[in-house]
Image (cartoon, rainbow, N blue to C red):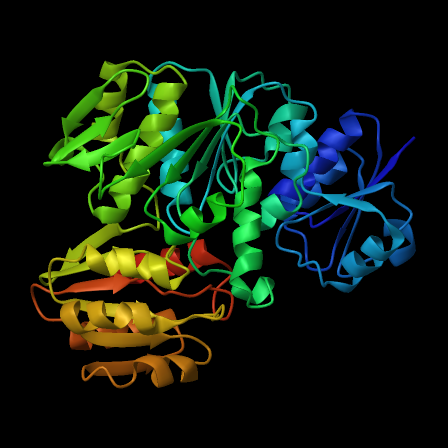
Length: 444
């Protein structure tokens, strides 16, 4: 019996463990942190051996294969030892893909992944497709496969960390939204290494597959010069229609494949420049999957958006509060600021990932009346943004942050939580940061 060691016992790790058990493997789960009670219960229900708070090195390195959580870096000691021993290391999506025959629609990019993934799923579901949702959003793909889900299509959001440990998995429809600096702390501050990870979404594609990408992205342009694309090329743009499968022109949303489709841009439920990219990518992907024009038009017009992404929370005393906690890099914050139409108090801060804040300075000068720094250590923010000539508050908890915003904001202003940074210095995760923001705002 082959042995599989699983590192990390959250959604993906526990799902992989259950699937591995059902496929006849000897399974051992190890997590350096504390495992949530619901995941302990799931492992115990299946009599899967697990440990928390440490890694049993001998047991792990005795495995034939290791499935690791995307959050574990390659320089973690146990991973270094496994690599030195020549143990094959994969992730949950790669493992689950071995046992799933569904068509895979896979989405990656530095920004817009969750919105585009959710929109594609919304369109397909509303069109009556037998479709599942997985990856960084929804339930573990491995668990769904273990439970016998028989979807015809899966829509899967993929991070660069997941792509790093995928080798044989094939995206039938691959969507690459953009490549901008993010997670550089995991890639030795080397942008090329990060770009290489994103481009892995193309591996294993065949001639009858499709590759959808933002043609205006300078890094994607550069990377495509190095790749021989086997799949059908499906570029999109909001700057030009020449050679594009999807584009915006004269206030209209256009798709050219498999037959011409258009609708008024104002009829789209998502607004803002960044959401035009997301809507174009989603439209191309779903039309390639066979969605009819009337179903596409309806779903593009009634999509409700994604929690923690430019989510309007409330208006209090004439001040609008917007939760954009998913903006964990500078470019995501840029898109959020670009969409603001009223004087803005911007909340930024958290665990810095090698950020360069220069790109958002012009928008801060144009749009913002104040900055509220929210982090355990805000020294880099003071150095980068302390000379903007606007009011600044330094806070180290969400409660103090909201108090500072209330003092700065006047009727007609918008308070925008769009942090540019990861959340792990003060919060459990991005969702926790957004939920605390929403709860405090609603209690004002």
